[in-house]
Image (cartoon, rainbow, N blue to C red; front, side, top):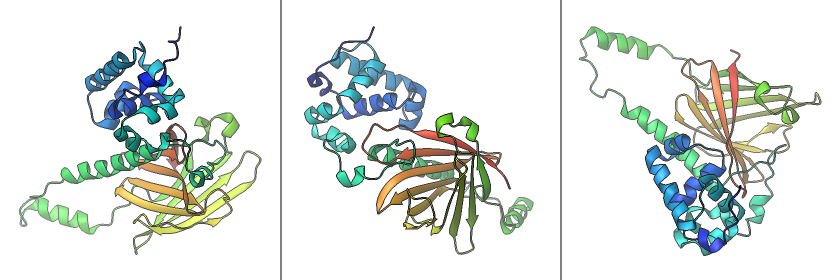
Length: 289
């Protein structure tokens, strides 16, 4: 049996950390995935949830998360200032200019806080990768040094470069396109050309193409995808690309592409821009060439 609805005043006692964890629960995360996202132990996450339940009197963490979502406007109105600053997307009313950026087909959206967290995770992954490099290295005269020098002189294929095909079987049938292909083509001047071709459920085709530097500066998109007109790119790690799509100067979505160690599969994580409760979407691509 569901717990009775609690008055917003009880929810206003929650701290920003407790709200953050409850929002992730609402978005579909598990205790394990929340611990990984926030770089905390599972025991620490459970302790936060216990404290939140004690404050509000709600016996179930999932039920408390649902109440936070149901009373999000009241939670922000009664919460301390740091909570409102932490979760600006919960403020009411929403930004009208931001609300006009409609997401394609599904209409799903996310918060600016989730977007910032996702980008921060990508940068943290890059920093961790850099920290593992052996700075000392072998002696210049050693065979290992010569082997490494020869390997460095040999061009290595970039993990993301090439053509990829979306695994459409994993997409809900009512939203499923017939085919989606994506190609990344790095150039000598360090710009990346991205080409996307979609065959929609009714058999019509959509095409988008752009060339951008990895500096986060938006550039125009050519083609016939009406819901986007600009893209910006960043690359926090060799196997990761962060792409932000926009329309009329307003963000539409941020997509993080990460290639697996075998180089044959690529995961796309999508965060929709907007004011609704965030929910991450993930899809899978397979390498074509």
